[in-house]
Amino acid sequence: MFMSIQIRSMRPKTYVLGVWQDSKRVSNALSPWNGVCLEAIASPNFSGKRGETTIIGSVLFVGLGKKGALKRDDLRSLGGSVVRALGKAELRSVSINLHLTIPQGIANEKELGQLVAEGMTIASWRVDQFDGSATKRESKLGALQVTSKSKKVLGGLTRGVILGNAVNDARRIAATPPNICNPPWMAKEAKKIATKCGLKCSVISYAQAVKLGLNGIVNVGKGSQEKPCLIILEHNPRKKKNRDEHLCLVGKTITYDTGGYSLKISNGMKGMKYDKNGGMGVLGAMEAIANLNVPARVTAILPCAENMVSSNAYRPDDIIEMYNGVTVEVTNTDAEGRLVLADGLAWACKQIKPTKIVDMATLTGGVVVALGSFCAGLWCNNAKLKKQIESASKNTGERVWELPLWEDHRDYMRAKHADLHNSAPARGAHPIQGAAFLSFFVDKDIPWAHIDIAGVSSVERDRGLYCTGPTGWGVRLLAELAESQ
Ligand code: BES
Ligand code: ZN
Ligand code: ZN
Image (cartoon, rainbow, N blue to C red; front, side, top):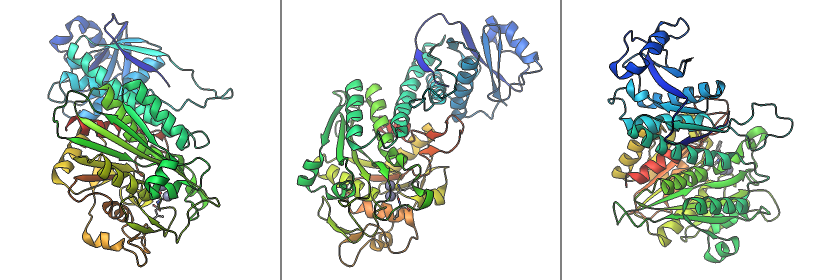
């Protein structure tokens, strides 16, 4: 299903109301709909189980489940159920009035609107860019017009759609295959998005990167015919909540990861178009931050490269001097993400001197083994920043789990013939090795967090709100983090 969602004040054709599974009485607030509510409750085909829907007259009822069991995150799923039912019934204009039944204790009216709209927007998206003449799928459903009787809900709905659209934009680019999406294409796409939503965008070209000594990015990307680059996006509004804060987001943007000469084996390469998803989470977050006019200064850095095999490619045993002067012996060309990120982080520390840095990356297969697709791995050197990330994560439902980073882990990354190796001889504590490596490229006094999203950035089959493909993980988390600055 694909449907664009438009929020506006208008006279709707359909009303959405919620019904509790265990309610036998209709609340006073629902009095104009008393009759149909009683009918819905009495219907043998509708028990009010969470997510169940039925249409009676001009009302779409959605089950809220048992009172007391409904949580904030469930409101997103309800949005998904509502949008699917509307799509099936070919209804195109609707008023969301769930606030009449859902108490403010779960979410206030604005939050309720936001959560439901996030769910509606995320659930109504699918990968349809490459539907050819042989695809037999339901056609695009066009626009769904959404309103609410409550002004506050309406405001929340608008916010939710902005966030959901940014998630979907990140997913659209993430899903674009490597025969189209290479570093130059990515730079163009970032510029397009920046122009559309009012961000400043600049690109450090391959030639400039060579001159500047961004040798992590240069070496990882030089084997490809499509040369690497560093993309910079800036949001610097006149109105800022805190003048001195400057948040920097860095996203691993490997448009394809073959592993390089340490070639990925068997089917391990399949899906590596998603190795740019850290960068796509950052890009989507910047789109949301701009469209929501977040009153905080935020700069995004996307080190972008394609990791290929060719006579120009870097190889195991190469020793590279990185942007900050640290030397690295390449022990594995498949540990390329940390090399491009390291330059991105070091460049950010030197050139933009942010007050906080968060990087996000599909960095290791090891984090998938450790945490599965339940949450992302988190490392953070600062208690306040960690708290802010965890609180944003609680609000958006994008879960993170902290893993350790000790001096022992850092020592593990030291090499014999250079300062560091990019992959230690033994695979133990693999995701931590990545974080430990990166720590050598961040100034000690800057609060920094690293988020490894290898397990959560895509789903292999339809799951909850998400269809098979990229999830846009981190877009809402980072936008929320920026709002808390
Ligand atoms: N892009 C991969 C990590 C990855 C693996 C993401 C599976 C999503 C799913 C990364 O560049 C990589 O290849 N990491 C290696 C590092 C190793 C060679 C040091 C890994 O995790 O095996
Ligand atoms: Zn790799
Ligand atoms: Zn990679």
